[in-house]
Image (cartoon, rainbow, N blue to C red; front, side):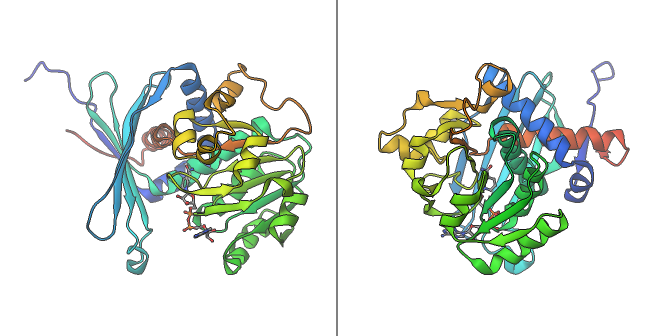
Length: 330
Ligand code: NAD
């Protein structure tokens, strides 16, 4: 075995290191690049597996893919354990495994919990950067759970917002989001759903809703909406008629029409698959994106495995660069 090429070894990056190393700009750049690669056909997601374990009421699965442009190969494995909160743990748990695309050898193990939030926020931020009106001033948030603070922080960096308004089905959760707005120096106001639609120039929805929370007639012309909560069959955050009246963009069309926000408009026939554009086409300059100040643009952010792999590979690279990565030989 003496002459065999040596493994480069396995890098291990824990949750705390990911949080310390991977900032919003790193995540934005990584997610934007992988969306662009997907639209060019240089990166693809493999079929997702998601199964009920029949134990601890848990849902477990994995999302994998290969980005040939970024040379990132791997799988995010994890799921949802509803009893975790009572044990002082996050209900969503995930870990990313990266492999050397040239040899298939395991190259990194990276904590996926913080990275999931930061890559999901980067996804809506990329959509705002490319699709929202440049003069957008009012940011509307629908949702006030774990993801919402990440979403707010990333969105606030994309336009010169002067106000944040919010609505949540559980109003008691709003003050925590308000504290994040305050920290960012933005006035925060809890409003009704109708007021949110009437005032907001950019709206992010990030809830676990199974019924529409925003109706078409409440939304003003020119609004950009990033629908981020719907990532499963049956979930829904906005009226299907709103999706039908908007110019629709997504991370991945195959997911948008099956598990994303567009699934309902597809099911009732008001939207066809060919009307949904991958955001990567806008990033690559192959689609103009917003075409007028009055157009409503809607980004259906379903969440793809390649986003996780992209930010995990950034974490592994940065941890190696600053010497904080644990390394073991295989
Ligand atoms: P969370 O449990 O911390 O918060 C849930 C949010 O949804 C809160 O605003 C809550 O008030 C609201 N909510 C709960 N039950 C509801 C119901 N029945 N109807 C309407 N609203 C309800 O969750 P989170 O971690 O903030 O995640 C929010 C959503 O985002 C989840 O649906 C999650 O699956 C989804 N998500 C999507 C992506 C993606 O890439 N698109 C990534 C991560 C999470």
